[in-house]
Image (cartoon, rainbow over all chains, first blue to last red; front, side, top):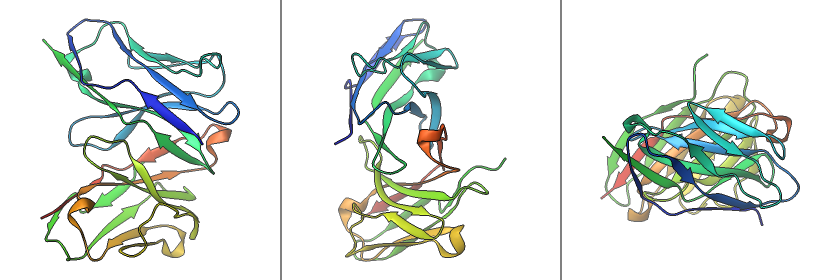
Length: 111
Length: 116
């Protein structure tokens, strides 16, 4: 069935460091792919998405490229800030019009 | 545009008690979802409605959980009786249309349940 595998956290970085959070998926066909972010005490917010292979989704300095050859959708940011500290979830559609989420990767950024 | 509204935000109950959560989706969104997020895990779908009909409730523990979406708008999720393992965040979400057509699922801030 459809599934998502994310790198385990926590990821701890200093401010201005480069961030990569790995995500691989199994799915039927070529679905849209999503990254959501959850700040402390809040619900999930859509961070970015890509709707077809080779598309790059981007938002708030974060980027992710839809790689069908490697079934991956890794999240990257060139220079993280303390305010980026949150839990990041990769998600893929599964079944009829619903999302299947990875386990989440906690990011902690220190000054 | 108003987002997905949920209440209450926080609830503490004793095991074997009951609790109900309410959700108001984004206006016009036909699909409504309830997800359960246990601490340290990703959200897991409990039930999915299309208008006022159930599309998927395969992961809903029907011996204790129930949900309804009367009139195809607001929804309530009820737990009775609650168990310790029901401690989680209950996330309501909604979507205008099909993900395959480029639509997005939008989440509320969640209802945080602690069962003691």
